Amino acid sequence: MFRRPVLQVFHQFVRHESETVSSLVLERSLNRVQLLGRVGQDPVMRQAEGKNPVTIFSLATNEMWKSGENETYQMGDVSQKTTWHRISVFRPGLRDVAYQYVKKGSRIYVEGKVDYGEYMDKNNVRRQATTIIADNIIFLSDQTKEKP
Image 1 (tube, rainbow, N blue to C red):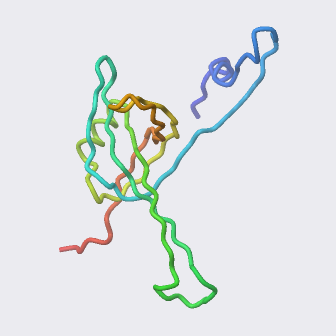
Image 2: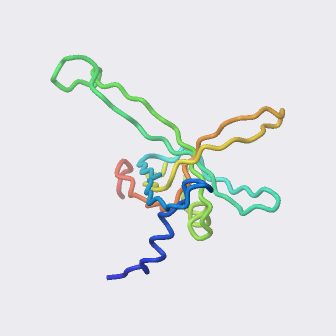
Image 3: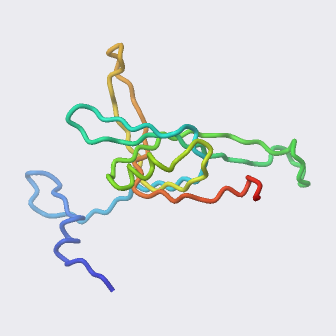
C-alpha cells in the first residue's frame, strides 16, 4: 500500500487562522464534481498570452422526474430539465486528449471541481462565469447508435 509521508499530508490540511493566532487548525474541505452527460459542442483550445492553453467544451446533463400523481409510466408524465456545464481542461495530457477525442454528442463522464470566476467582456463589463475544471474524463460507449 502506498503512503505519503505524514508530514506531507499534514502540510496539505494545515492553515493558519490569522497572524495573531499561532495555533494551527486542521481543516479539510472538498470541492468535487461528477458529471455524466453528452457533449454539446466540439472542443476548442484557447490560449491567452502568457497563459497555459485550455480545452473548453460544454456538457449537458438531464434531470428527469414524474410529473403528476399517476403511478403508471406514460411518456406524458415525465418532465425533463437540461443543465449545461462549461468544462475546462488544463492538465497537459488530458487537455490534448480531450481536444482530439471529445466530439459533439459523445457520452462522457467528467470528474473535477467547480470554479467561480470573473472576466471582462469585450464591452468592459465584468461578468461572472462558473466552470468545471476537469481532472478526469472517461469516454463511454454510445448505446443509442445502431451496431453494424
